[in-house]
Image (cartoon, rainbow, N blue to C red; front, top):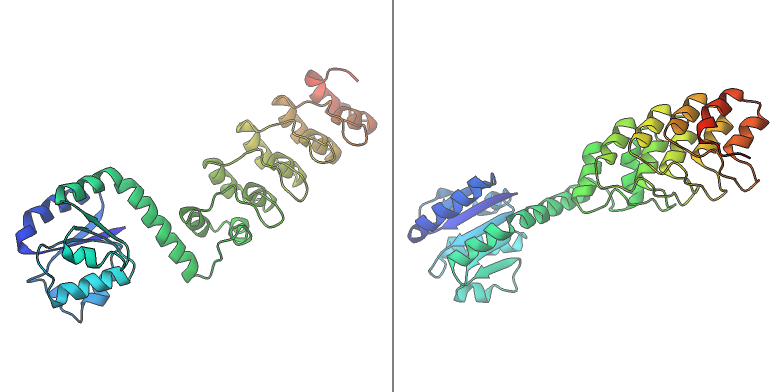
Amino acid sequence: MTWLIIYTPKNEEKCSELKGFFKRNKISVKIAELEKDADFEPSDIPAKLKLYSHCVFLCDKAPGKNEALAWGLALGRGLMVYAVKSEWTKRLQKCGSLNDFESFDRLLAYLENNINGIAVEAKKKEAWKKLFDTGNPFTGDSLAVHVQKDNRDIVQTYVDAGMSLNERTSLGVPMLNVAIRAEQVDEVKWMLEQNIDLNAVSGDRGYSALMDCVWKKNLELTKILVEKKVNLDFVSNDNQSALTLAVGEGKADMVKVLSDAGACPDKFDALGMSAWTYAKLFKRQDLLDLMEKNHHGQ
C-alpha cells in the first residue's frame, strides 16, 4: 500500500500533518505540490500514478489542467481517492473510488479509525491482481496445485486475496489434507499456525487429516497433528479410525503415538472389527501391548 498526497501551497500544513500520520503508521507515502512539482508535468502523470494505490487531494480551488488530469487518471486507474468535499468532488462522485469528507479533520479522523481495514482491502486487491497477472484462477483446485508443490508465496497470495485455507478442491478435499497427501511437511506446519479446521473430513475418502497421515504412513506428520490435539477417534465412512488404519498397516510406531495420546482401540468398523480385534487377528501381541492401557474389553 503506497499513498500519494497531492497538495497546493495553501494546504502545506495539512499535508505535513497527514504525512506524519502515515509515517507513524509505517505506511509508504510521497507528497507532490501541484504548482511546482515537476512530477506532474502532463506527460509524467500516467507513469507516476502507477506507483500508488491511494491518493489524497488537498486542494481548495478549481483544478488547473494538470490537476484535473491527475484527478481523472487517479480515479480512472482505480486508485482510492480521498478529498475534502467541494463542487469539484460532487461532479466526480460517479467516476471511481472517491471518498470525500466535510472537512480535513473528518478526513484525517476517518483514516485514523480505518487505516487497518484500508490496508487489508489494499492487500486483497493487490493479491487479486497478482493472481490475475500470473494466470492463477481463484478456485480451490488451483490453490491445491500450489499447496501440493509447497509454493508458499502463491498460497499466501490466495489467502491475501480472501480465500480460506479451509477451502476444498472440487472433490471435497480440504487444503490441509491436500498438503498431507503430498507429504509437504513444511506446508502442513505453516497451515497449522493459521486459522484452519484440524478435523475437516475429505469428501472423497471420508478421511480426516489424521487418517490421511496414517494412510500415507507418515510418522512425522502423524506426530505433528497429534501434538495439535486433533480428534484421535474420528471414524470414516466405513467406521474406521486412524488407529484401525495404523494396525492394518502393522505400523507399531504409529500405533504407539496414537495410543500414547489416548486413541481408543475399541471402535468397531463396518465389518464389526476394531483396532484391538484386528491386532488379535494378525497375532500382533506388540500392538496389543501398546493399546492395552486404552482397551476396555472385548
